[in-house]
Length: 474
Image (cartoon, rainbow, N blue to C red; front, side, top):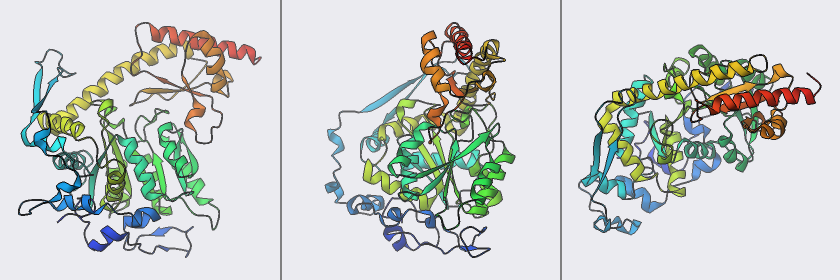
């Protein structure tokens, strides 16, 4: 039987009472008897990382009972608000598919959602997601990230990965808690942390992404007696905005530091499938550092692969934490759009996992070709004025203007660049502290490559030179 709270199967050896009444906290042992020492895993449970509120928050009783409906059960739960499906004016939804990116000459196809699948999509549904779609996603994660379907981890769907991350932060952080953030950081991560009044600790990247050395330096010098951070956020593939991708060795280094200081990893990876070669993920590699698993919560998105407007993403991680996310979903919006889920499910049924991966490769190829053309024009105008890491995934160049002597890109963009008729995002927008930055984020995802890119880089170069003159550097 599933967890009455969320509809998810209960994790092994966890009493059902704990699933509804709060978390079991396993005392931690350290080598020196303090929270500053190296953590020694003993009877580890991811529940120990839940926030105080998440430990006691429950799903409402009526909705909780929906999870145990099934064959042999006479249900009178219509008072939960579910309308009679005969009143829905839809008999089917037909989707006309484009020719595959890899074969523009291929015949276009149509797929249809109808009968039971449509009825389920149009009705209230479980907070973790439609059962068939959850099962498909678990199979995808198992295949792509080489994780055994051992019942310790599962998938929960949300209205985009940002929705899930916001809920995950609320599930793990108490107000005022410190949290470790890869910087520069995707600015959309910051609002829920500001709501929580979290202490945002910046961990700077280098050319290979999140720096394990910077992380170790911060944690090894953490003030004695001060509450320690329990969560690290990182975007390891084609990061927005840095464009950096962390290789296998770097991820293992970060995992070792996190193990040493008892820190969970939030792996935000919306650009994972935009890499021409898939890199081993933190979710895959954690088993090499934590044999018991349960220390990585991974966030995937369909926005860059299927449609941003579907607003569909999924979190993968230990059931104790995904269930806490599900409880927040139930209280905030009941569940993610059933129609968006059904559209995605029907497409995945049509493609299969191999077809989905093939589509991902085609998308990655498109962006790689755009990046190469965009970057070639950037070199034409900015060599000697700026540098950047050439991204292997993602949609961005993180252009460092330090070679031009510019330390604050905001002033450049707001004045000289705007006057010339070109815009980029100044680097300060990607630091929680709002510190000055010499960087500018430039996106190549949809800009016109035939004319606008050439014109834009010519104008940006002129703006940089004008700023140099104003600063007395040229």
